[in-house]
Image 1 (cartoon, rainbow, N blue to C red):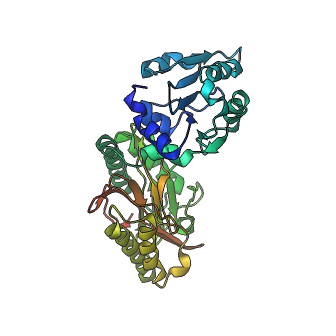
Image 2 (cartoon, rainbow, N blue to C red):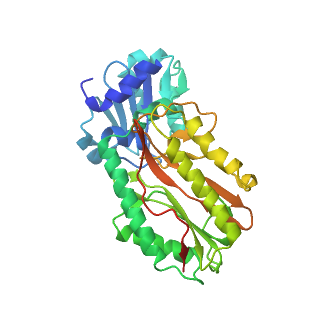
Image 3 (cartoon, helix red, strand yellow):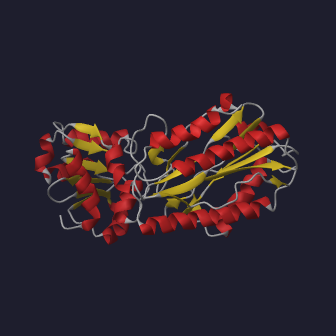
Length: 369
C-alpha cells in the first residue's frame, strides 16, 4: 500500500488472519488519520483489504474535510439525494477479492447496524466477524506523543480540580459544584470533556456512576466524590478523588484508608510482563482482607487513551500480559449503599520495570469546605 499510517493495522490483520477490515469514525479512525469525523446518519466507512488499496465511502458534504487526509485509495462520495447504496456498490466493485472473504472484520462495538447491513448487501458471501478488539489493539501501546497528550489532559484536569475545591462550601448543590468543575476545566485549557463529570455527595457517592443532583445541598460530614477528566487533542484524562466536607468520622477514615491502600498496591505490582488478572487480584485482596469486603462493586480499572474505556481491562480472569506503553486506570472503590462511597483513581503507564503514575493530585484524605 505504501502508506505507513496503515502499517499497524495491516500487521494486525496478517497476525489475526483477517482478509479485510471495515471501520467507521472513532478512536481507531483517529489513531490512523490524526483526526475524526462525527458518527451521524450519513455513513462514512473505510474498507482495508490485507492486500491492495483501501477504499473509502464518504458523504459528499464531508469531502472538503476528508481530502486533507490524503487517503491512499479510491474515494466514493455520495450525495444525500442519491443515497449511499450506489457508493457501497462502487466500493465493492473496486474490491473484487473480498466478494467471498471468509474473515471480514468489523468494529462491532462501534459500527451501527445500518452500516453493517450496507456492507452485507454488497458483500453477500462474505463472512463478517467481530474484530473490534483486534482492530483496537493498534492503540494498546501508546507512543511518546500520545503519552504527552495524556499528561496534558491530566495536568489540566488536576489544576481544575484544585481550583474547584477552592470554591466548594457547605450548602452548594452537586450540580453547582459540577458547573464549577466544568468551567475550571475549560479555563485551564481543556479542548473538551472526556465524559460527563460525576460529582456526588453523601449517599449519592455510593453510586459508582452517580449523576449530580440539583436538589441536594452538600452537608458537613459528607463524602464528596469527583470522577472526571479533560480531553486534550482527543486524549482523555480519567481521575477520581474523594474528599470529606468539614469533618470525617473515624469509620469513614478507615473506609478511605482501605481504598487508598488498594490503590497503592495496584500501582506497586504493575510492570511489563505481569497479567491484568495479577494486578486486579492484588488490589481486590487488599479490599477483601479488610472489614469492608462487603462493599466491593467493581474491577480495578480499564485502558485509557482516545477512548475513556478501552483495552486492557484490569480484572480477574483477564490473562492478557501487560506491555510497556499500555495506559490504564487504577481505581479501587468501596460503596456503602445509602451512606458513603470512596474511589481513588490514578492513570498509569506501564514501563519495563514498573509503572509511571501520570496523575499526581494528592491522595491523602483531605477535608474541604
